[in-house]
Length: 485
Image (cartoon, rainbow, N blue to C red; front, side, top):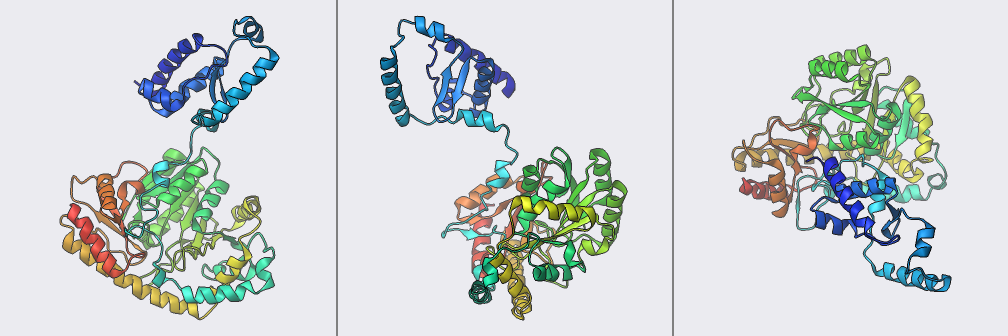
């Protein structure tokens, strides 16, 4: 039986129950009704909403759901009708009793409507760790890999400046826009300073596409992009990718089928696979965007996280016609708390993004921008990137070796040449969700591969991140996880 039919059945039962009650009598809470009827709270709430629309019951915020549907004259003829003084005393008594009663939030569910955000993706086990967990899922740098001394010095110096405590331009500090533009061979006027990469994704998707339209994403891909699309009210269509990035033939089919005008890509060290969009596919993807009049959101989060060789040039630099909107972030290669990023966009799309920016907030905090500017323009920045590259490379190699040595039957399809993640295929028949939960219970946080697919995954995978743990922790964590296989 479907949820709708089940809700209709419960609605009819509740209607019959209400007919035997007096006007103003309170129905049991959603939790109690859920237990009585053996149905989910969502189904109970849907049934109550139906009765509310029919005028059989009324929901009162903070109090609960009450029988309605009969007039004042009928109330006056009721043998239990109270005088005004008695009624006031009764109301005071009921109010006092309700203060001790269990809250009933059923009215919120019917008022809020359907949630856009997938709670499963938003509340992943890999979000945070406790002191007792080995962190092999956190997508940020361990404290020893962050330029902490430089940031502390810059923070003190910038905090003394009056400019750090005044309003910055909504588009960002001109000097900081110029620094980000230099990395893309763009004009400073094309740049928009943002409070981090995730906020940039939500903002770009919401501004460039109408609610109800479709976003095409490569698959597997970053779950935060899926959440950003849901927040913007967009539908998701997944296109298969491999070791060389999104497959152009599949992308063409999806564009033809969905009429999507927005494509989300990670051409450089994709999360979670580490794939790089090949030179040949770059040309094909740009040609498809031009043919179908689509925008490409280039999530360039890992540009400063190259390990073997140099990172490929941004897709933005190969696009003269404004199809590519590129997102950069300083949070990943510097520190989780340095929430500074940038969006690069040309033409009317860039103008629309910059115009819409002020609707979200007046500016990225000037102090944060001043610290970011100081870091990027100092001699400490290239030194930090050199140290970071060595530290990440050592951790990556240790993790790959430990996985290949101890995780019998597991495979690493692609050893990434950049980024901070290792995409591991589990032995045939392994349930990735069960495995991830067991790892969590064993004190190791890893990423469930199902979270990186819009649709059903073709096989069982987990994502292991090597940036937030030390090498001894990486080895011990992988060994502990391997024992679960």
